[in-house]
Image (cartoon, rainbow, N blue to C red; front, side):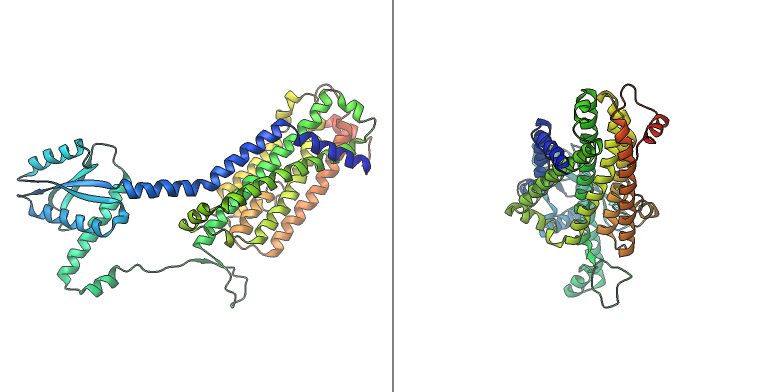
Length: 438
């Protein structure tokens, strides 16, 4: 036991003092800081844009087109009542005909008085004159959508005037209809009011995205660290010295637990960075503006995330250690661990692309596959309501897989660290494993 702790402490000290660890941790902390502060930065620029850069659209009053002039004035009145739309209509000139209007409006755009302008044609099937928006620069779809919405509202207003409705009736007709959505569990009792509304589901998706990213990053990076540590000791012949004083299995599990402490320390640093930045006053305001309430995060979700991280780490760590033990040159390590890397990538991508559909058959099956369940079951727990027995079954399969993987990896490691030269075949490994009993 003393030798095991010696290996663990040596591994922790060696990795935490490495420049690669410090630089990687710092870079990821900076990236997370930028990500957490991004809503506040976007909100700052959006606020400035709304205050200083309203989209000015010009129009001309034509003597020969009273219908077009009336429609332009109605649009100007509509946007005047709705400044949040960010569009303002400008009367650029009073002219006699469309040719003079085109000349005057182009001059307004050239003089930077307007971003674009409206021209009016013959009435269409709606009864309103046809409208064309012209701009010197690329047409922005948001501007077109706002103009189209304004035209629809003007058309409705004209029809309602002809119908003889009062102002109160018009207000009731245009009043928005409230529709809420709540995610519930069909297995809960009829009196239960538990469920997630739309905003809470949005927060859950964001939190789950961060969790599966951290899980994937931690599992893959720490697994690579274990494999490279073992392979570098073999390639430098340090393993021959170590094996005379420390048993191979003590080395293997010492490295696994040591790298686990290093990886967990990184995650704690990242969590503290996220919490610290999210607690800043400007971020609280930005999150509230985007209807993001971090207090709605279920604490049990974080507990499950920790459990699945631990289980996923030890499953992949034993496999990385076993693969690292049979590779004699660090140049061959990338190719050797590729199958394990692809498994972790598959789990990560299944979870990432299933965030909008956490109840598909693929997700349900993958949540029981031990190589995928650390990622996939998290989206089911966070975004749907899986029965408790399904979560326990997934964890049970994962724990049994860790035991089997640890047993096989220990036998491979015990023989692999003593095999030099070219990478041995599986037949040679099986033959060598029979000589040792774990």
